[in-house]
Length: 121
Image 1 (cartoon, rainbow, N blue to C red):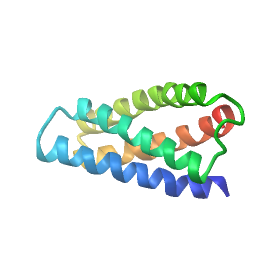
Image 2: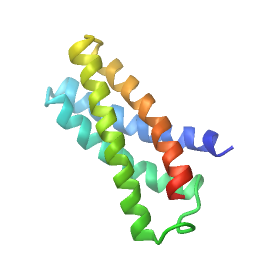
Image 3: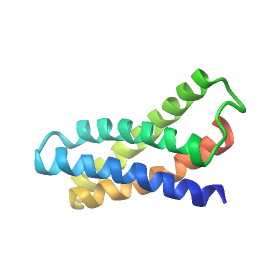
Image 4: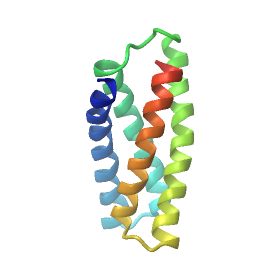
């Protein structure tokens, strides 16, 4: 049941991430890797807030400060995966930029869920 709830929470965070990415990378033509990193960080905050409200119980395994630190630490790996997949899809395979972002976001979704479920919350 948690994965279904997380799917919706992750969906909201993904909409934030992808929408901001399209605005800044595609329409305003800022560097897509820099934009990808910044929008990912914003989406991580949205995901954390919604996750502790609807999916996971905050503070059960770790104190709040450590929990937030772990979320961002785990997300740093997720960000690295996201950017590598984005780069490979867009620059090497030549997939359209928005589609590349959607693919990268989808792959990292599963990383985030399993790591948060088993190690953070």
